[in-house]
Each structure stands twice: as C-alpha cells, then as structure tokens.
Length: 355
Image (cartoon, rainbow, N blue to C red; front, top):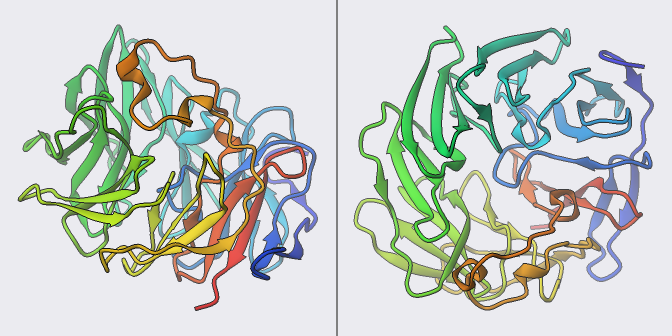
C-alpha cells in the first residue's frame, strides 16, 4: 500500500446515547486519525472528498474519504509531513501541506506532488496554514532564530512575500469572503491581529483585559468580526474596525467554529466536557444545545483554570491535538466533523444536524 492506494469502507452508523443524533464513524483502523485544525475546512466545497490524516502507515499521511463510494484513498507518501498544516482547496483539486523545509500541494485526482516553495536557509514552516476562499493565496508561518514570519504564496505563480515579521505568528486565516484580509495569532498577551495580504494595516484587533485567556479565533462570515474563546468564560465577538466587543455566549466553549452562513456555531467543551454544543452566535445569548457527546480524552491539564496560565510563569503543556474534538461544519451546514479517541485511538466522526 502507498500513494494512490484504495482502502475499503470503514464507516459505520451509530447513535448518540443522549441526543439520539446520527453519528457516522468514518475511520476504524487502530491508529491516529484527525481532520484539519478546527477552523480549516475538512471538505472541498462540493463535498466530493473528506480530507484527513491517518497514521495507519506508521507516520502521518493525507487521506481522502471518497464520499460517493465511501472508500479511503491515500494521497501522500511523504516523510516529515506536518499533519496540522494540511488545508484542502475549495475546488477539490489539491490538498496543501508543509514538511518543515518546504510548502507543497498534492493533486487529489493523480496524487502528484508539487513543491511551491522551499524554506531552506530561511527557517522551518510551523503549525497551521490557510488558503484564501478563491484558492489563490496560501499563508504559511515560517520561523528561524526566534523570528517568526508570515509568508503568503501565490498558488498560481509560486511567487511569495513575507508580509509580517515579528516575535510570534501562528494560526493564520483568510477572511471567508475577502482574499486581501487575514487574521493571525501573536503572543498570548497580544493574541488577535489582522493584516492585509500586502502586509499593510498590521494591527492588534483586541487588547485583552487583565489575565484574560484569548484563544481559538475564527472569522464571522458576512461580517468584519472575529469570534474568539475567552476561556473558560464564553465567546466574544470583536469588530475589527471599531473595536466593539460583544458577548456571544457565556459557557465553556473551547474550540468554537461558525457555519458558512454565520447562523450557527458549534464547539467542544472541557472542564467539564459536556459534549459538542451548538448555539446561535447572533442573538447575544448563545444558549447551548447538546449535539452529541464527544467521548474524547481532551488532554491538557493546563486548561483547568479560569485565567491565562502563562501569566503565572512557565506552564507545562501536554495536549496532543488528536485528543481534542475540534468540531467543524460541512460546507452545506448539515454535518459536524470531529475527532474522538473513544475507541483508544483517535477516529474521525461525522454528526448529522437536525434543524
């Protein structure tokens, strides 16, 4: 087995024991599986593919679930693949990824890999990456010698430009309707930043109050607003132009993500884990409604706190990301995809939303 290998269907239908919601367990192999990071789409826009990482070969590789047949297709055989860098193109043609030293994409039809950029001598690509809604621009954080850079690559020409250079850059995300606008995460004490794709307008979007833990941001579709967890005190919305703050919900939303139409949010929860909750991000109340239980181990004892732990000094962190559900919507808003290690290994699940 290797690049281009087809694996038989592994999915099975389950029911959540509390809500009765229909769950589909997508993977079953005794190894780690997960979808892209919570704010990065796991599907192409037409929902022909579900993109995920599997460790079944002994190392992380990119796989697709072919939704028409249910079979699993291995896309890569690539040493050093950075598993949380993966981001599928909206048109379904490619999956983009990094391997530390370079930025790559793989064709979903042929499994052919193409290197778009090499960072040799410049540093190493780190963490999550992001595509613009039109698939033209790809944002990749690169770090070397304590200097972090946000590199934007033109996927048509391969040209690239460093648009931010500073102490910390992570978790970039393009605005869902504006390919000229990005957000990114700076250091924990000045977390939320926005910048134009040409590097102009780099600015702090929100100045935290006291020891607030501002973490896990995403754009609100249809608005120039960032939604972020204010852990563990709920979700707030920040207008990036006027700076106005509003309360979105007050429960312990952990990795909150909004649907493409901006009408509904989903989030996992922790300390305590009360399951995946859905709520209205626009009514100023955000009353949670249980979608399904996650049954995830949710590693990360440093989350059991009511303020930012890094304000207290060096903080030990053991939090394997595949133990976190990281729920996200399908493009049509009918499903939520998430990871759970309820079987002893992280597997991929899809929950149907009954509206």
